[in-house]
Length: 459
Image 1: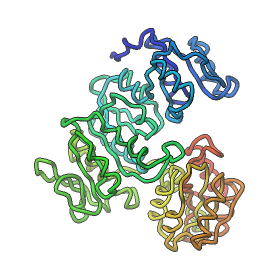
Image 2: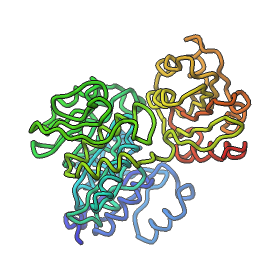
Image 3: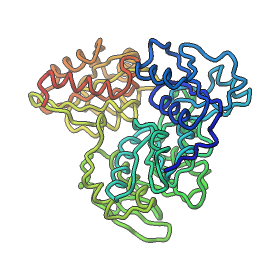
């Protein structure tokens, strides 16, 4: 099993950001014979101990808590997704001739295999996991990688030509791609998110559109027809465009024929899959995810039988509208993956009965009016935590929703929410915000919520 690593030998490469993808990039580049340097804003005594040991044992030059003074000799800079490309020393390196890429692009260049790549504001993790299960059930060599939690380069350099890398791709990962070209790409939707990074929706959409930028007529783009801002991105696409729609019957693409998930191919063939009510995962947004997944799998060459069986049995993903117990007739649902207002809206819409909503967290410069307006009488109380708590409370009161309580932490949110709930209600964690003000990641936040619910007797 070989990887395309020879052109990395003796290259001077600076890897910026020592998170999961940064460490994976360092390891792959070091193994390929590159002269690797590592940079992170954290000092050596602040980074993970295993990371520090690896960097020292590999002899990697470190810039921890500092930046390189001289960037003239750097051939390439590999950015971790959370690192904005406009930082001064990165701009200096680029001005001095260094190529600026991300870990996804590095994986594509160094590794083997064929790619399916999925992006969108919401639904990425569910759809990527679902598509990965389709490939596995079809007996394909499959690696589910990317923003879902596994660095792409780790599996790419160990892949062979028969391996499929089913990849969740964020806008941060895509904006630093150059040659990346999946066999099938997908854009699930496009709503406001990460405005602290992208500044405008035009910039955000342009980053998402890079997923199909190198595709040609032999590849496919699966894209949401019902989301007009999203679908407009396809105007510049050179691949075969396969729309999906929950609301309209299409001449080509994935749609609902009555209550049956259906695909009409460009050649005019009609293929039927399962009924909507056979899906285990709840909510209209998950029907959209299923339509997209069916199209991705079908145009990647999977059989309708394997796709249908997976659609009927897929149970969903952790931290996305995840039922995690009931106590005294009150349900607890963990939607910590709902890191923007649109995701939280979808969670509220998917829950039946009254809701006590736990929201708030790191401020990504989002607005919250649409979330409040989507309550539609279902949300009885809102428990707020984190940096955005006052901002969300102010938006709610301006729109006439006055039953908001700012809490100091998750324990208080869950306890007060449970006290206010009545049998049949749901205490729903769907923060509409990132987790970084109080937690390392949304997974940690979700686990804390589940622990709090369990301590109140949820089972």
